[in-house]
Image (cartoon, rainbow, N blue to C red; front, side, top):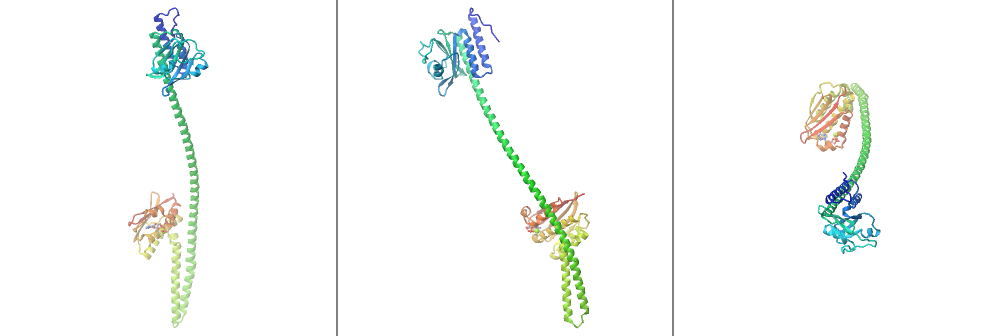
Length: 444
Ligand SMILES: Nc1ncnc2c1ncn2[C@@H]1O[C@H](COP(=O)(O)OP(=O)(O)O)[C@@H](O)[C@H]1O
Ligand SMILES: [Mg+2]
């Protein structure tokens, strides 16, 4: 909004009031603009100078107050000031000269002449006679700074001019405060942003390190899994080879050794037949020899059976388990409760071998560690899985044996079952026996 300037001829009181409002409005508008503080104050001072009624000369300036150090610091000037002035007025202690006095009193001050006013303590070589308005810049009762305006030696000093100066001082003070707060806010925001940037960078770096670590771990894991896989394959291969070897040795021992021994026995019987009745001593010797050969034949059969019971190949896993259980009862008196073993289970030969070896190892453990009197064995299918369960009533395997067993028996069982993508579970409770459950998915 612009107001018509009153003509210099008609400075009636009402025109003066209009002019005062106009100047106040202009300064208020300038101070609201978004420029930086220096520019705002420059423009504000220029507007005041344009207010003819105040008789302000073309010179003004603003000090900012440092309450802690009790000094005014020259912040901004308008008009031509000498180097000497600018240097000397850089800092004015509170109480010094006109401005310092206003800083202490907080009251508006008018001085008619720098030469006659004793309060005007500071002088400069090029000083010409002039008057002053010294305006306190107060925001919410707090002194922010001091503004000085040069006037002619006959300043306007009426109630309205003082009110206008004080109002302008208040507006300028509020603006300085606001700008200071804005600056502080901007500083805080900047600090915060810097912090965020730094933090983000740190996080990104940490994240990268973590990603690298994860990648490294994954690679190591892959390598480990690979070598584990290779070891498994190797172990399976060794098992297969061992089974084949056992099978071959068992066959050779049983067939060749067995047949030779049977031949030997028949020869001995023949010789015994031919031997005269009177050669009692010789016949006795021959009978003893035949008994030894009989025993050897039994041993050979037992060894062959133990290496790989032909019953496993001939009749399958169920019969083999029944046979093994009977042997155990015969030798150790352990009673067996066999379930589901009457039926013929149709599974591959290798899987039969696996199940039989698991059963044998479990039985060996029962004999060695469990001190059991009864063993329950069941073999059945459930949800497309073949399940072999062996339960004893012995002293019970403990958690430590299960979790931390580094003895090869349990590891061997796990590995054999794993080769068929199966699972094995060992459960034991003290005094209540042990249950070993093997679960193998049946391929369609
Ligand atoms: N049926 C069982 N009853 C009680 N303890 C058992 C049984 N089976 C295994 N254990 C315990 O688990 C351990 C690990 O078994 P295993 O790996 O076969 O090793 P090993 O038989 O050579 O000691 C055994 O030493 C034993 O303490
Ligand atoms: Mg064992």
